[in-house]
Image (cartoon, rainbow, N blue to C red):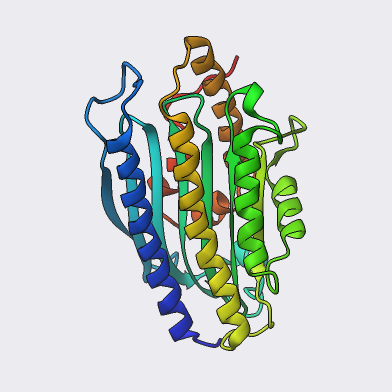
Length: 302
């Protein structure tokens, strides 16, 4: 198994850097917002609570860890922005599901995962993750998708949807040699779909996995894949800050709040039934609190 030590170090450092950038941007929104605020929300701007964690591989050996960051504030009812770098060997029953692990069960994976659930129903839920995984193969994966929680905002002509798609197209177009927008957009639509309800989770975005443009790590194609993955994170932050500024001070009704909580139920269903990151984290002995922090704090099923 090739070590890829330099690539691993650079990827890990980037994920930790972008976590710090995101925390600063979201805490800035907490300070900036003038209301309205939910009666249950705290009165002061929220700050992220940082919790380091570590894991033990299924063999009993040290297996890395991460840094969980949770925000509960007056703009965000709950937001998680977590980094992790984990390593070890896949359990035999899981190895066959991961590219390259059937040849060598050892793995290394680093990434950032973000989920935001605002108080205001006018403000959409959003998700982003990017990661670098090494087995006997190596690849980048990730993406970002937007989930408006009000039915009249959950369409492709809504201003937020149009703006978000434009940002996602832009990041792909800037890296067109490795990031075909049409493919990644379609992949997102197919992936974030609740098959049991025959409905999309939100309005889409981009999704990609197994991105290894040259079929081998350590050359200029790795640099291109890495640059695209970095730009996805940067673009996500900029885009969501703009979307939140346009929505976080709009008034809302109790009826809209209830509609938000029902749509959050769909989010729970997807993450528990289909989400690859949730499955990967649980199968590799990750931090359960971090993995399941994507669950919204309040939810209802009608």
